[in-house]
Image (cartoon, rainbow, N blue to C red; front, side, top):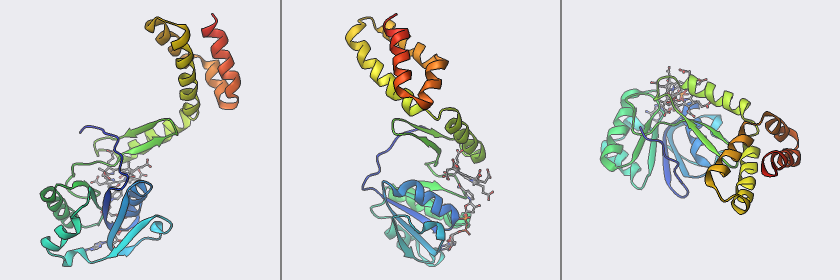
Length: 208
Ligand SMILES: C[C@@]1(CC(=O)O)c2cc3[nH]c(cc4nc(cc5[nH]c(cc(n2)[C@H]1CCC(=O)O)[C@@](C)(CC(=O)O)[C@@H]5CCC(=O)O)C(CC(=O)O)=C4CCC(=O)O)c(CCC(=O)O)c3CC(=O)O
Ligand SMILES: NC(=O)C1=CN([C@@H]2O[C@H](COP(=O)(O)OP(=O)(O)OC[C@H]3O[C@@H](n4cnc5c(N)ncnc54)[C@H](O)[C@@H]3O)[C@@H](O)[C@H]2O)C=CC1
């Protein structure tokens, strides 16, 4: 498995099965992709999401009819509780060249990770499907332990551009940036007062 960050703007994503799991997968994609949920019933968790709904009993559909639904899709998720139906959707995706994620059944070619996201960073976590609970646990730990990561990235961005003007040696620029990252007092200041953290960084490491 190889991690990638994809821009799904304007791409079509299909979710087969509109239960709690299908709704969670739909929520994962809907802020960027064009999501359609195909199911015989729809969880209230889908209310409020920007997704199209298409009512169908998938067991009644022929391979040809399912293949027709897949036309033009970039990625499909099978999230019905019937693994053999999910696996069948996966086989048709492989034939149609559509990326496939399986919520229950034979693993597809895509895993949906746990995501920690700030305005300046994105971390995706997977256990290769072995323990989603551990992925979730790691996400909550990272969210708690690095609550101010966005502000540290902002400070690093600012100091990096200052250093490009003042410090010609790359090795020295790198050393200073690491010192700031590892400075507990600067990290503590970031939580409440960006200006103070910035002043500390400049005073300690740029005018030293
Ligand atoms: C392979 C994968 C398929 C995929 O790509 O979707 C998959 C598969 C399965 N999950 C199962 C169970 C649970 N999944 C969750 C939660 C999440 N599951 C997610 C991803 C993935 N789940 C992919 C692998 C990710 C990896 O590589 O680590 C997360 C990260 C992303 C998301 O879904 O949004 C999201 C956490 C988001 C977050 O909070 O950060 C919880 C809730 C909890 O833990 O509280 C439980 C119950 C506890 C447990 O069983 O662990 C079952 C068994 C069903 C059964 O027993 O019937 C299967 C099927 C099987 O294993 O066969
Ligand atoms: N990948 C993951 O992250 C997780 C996967 N699971 C597994 O995912 C599966 C789905 O879980 P839930 O959403 O909780 O189930 P659910 O029973 O709440 O929802 C299933 C949905 O699929 C629809 N459906 C079922 N058969 C259909 C058919 N033949 N045609 C059309 N629609 C059909 C139902 O109408 C319903 O909307 C389960 O097998 C569960 O074990 C569970 C937890 C996490």
